[in-house]
Image (tube, rainbow, N blue to C red):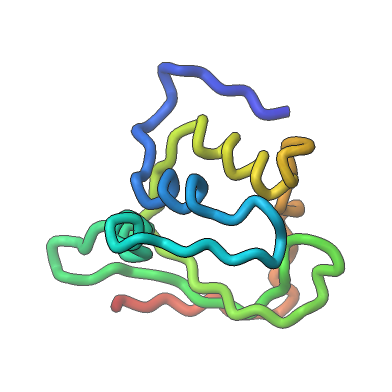
Length: 123
């Protein structure tokens, strides 16, 4: 169960808000963005700020999707510094991923490494 407390809620991310607000409501449909909207949906806003040394460290590993059938080969690139989003944004995403019908869970429990390696990089 997801429990939200206002005092723990970080500020929202403007790119997440713009993306959710402009995403098509029907699977397979496309949404046309104005130039103003396109500036708000900037993927760089989803990355943590560059560190003092000019790098954004990340890890890479091979895995699978986090939803069934969990069998497809996926190359995961995970930033070391986490990004913060607001609790309401998490709920908005869960509603969107669940087709507004329910709060959707789009993950599975942590899996063992099973001999895979995790590589560390600085971009």
